[in-house]
Length: 281
Image 1 (tube, rainbow, N blue to C red):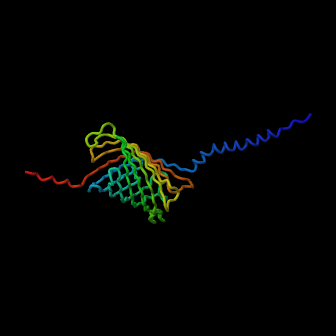
Image 2: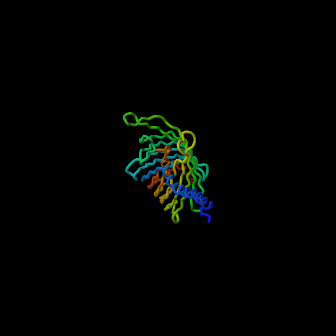
Image 3: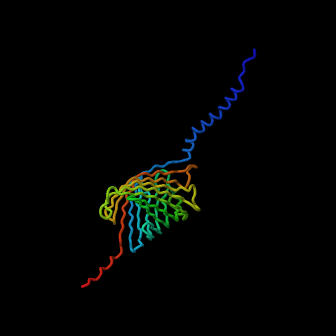
């Protein structure tokens, strides 16, 4: 009788199973490897803002805005932003603006935006276009913005204090879509409650964009009340996702800042009323 020996077919099948096992292990460990390339930082924020429009001509108006941005909802500084500008109303649906902003960003969270962990200043010029596209009772607006940013680079001196180094120039593009709809039938002058939602994405471009192009994304879910054509108040949930422009230990850092936002909006007409026509006897 011939001795029993393993068939070549069985041996080949065993060798062929090894790559399959290796591929399964690779797929199983891929999510963990991907997570190891990212650091996450979770913060609780509260933003309190005022936007004032000052109309001084038929198509021209001034823009004045201040944002009091806090971490831990209200106890600590996150950012201070003052923005000004001049608006020109091209037609009923299109408004353009050019302006200037001054910003102070503070150290907050586990991974501060500034590498040395200090607050830093920023000067900014910007150009903006807002296009409204109402659909029935729903107001839909699209906002496009270009920003030219001069960000102060702060170093740590020999004594551990702040040492200003230079202004670093960067460019950024922003796009926001906002949807707003009245809750019920508006009263006189548009008076009444409304609901709104918006999302805005920020992308860096040009020189001095370091680690990535994606800068941040903002999401707001709001309830508001329009008291009259001059004043409205709105607030609700707010989320800000920020990707740092630098790596920490060769890993990308994402901030997940969740909290609430409270906006006050003023529209003031500074034009003198037209003189009354003379009476005819």
